[in-house]
Image (cartoon, rainbow, N blue to C red; front, side):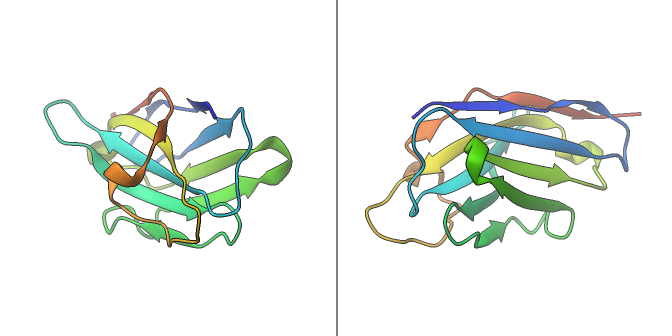
Length: 126
């Protein structure tokens, strides 16, 4: 499976962006699709993840209440709606898949994610 991340850009503080993660291959019901971000000079950070079948989500505390997942099964795409953006949200955002034979709740452990897309830059600045 290949992932295509898109939707990044430049936005003012308080603004919104919607990131897309489109999968070219099959997504299975136990797949968790996660978003991670990495700012210059900082370690990769978990933003959130969603289970493809159940829609169960997990969010980092830093984005909880501001970021929301949605899915389009027909398009094999996961969306991350980002509202009330802050300068500290500036980073390259990556989507990834954690694939498991059995259901596992969405996890923040990036080592569990085997398939990664290219990043999309999000810049929050006035």
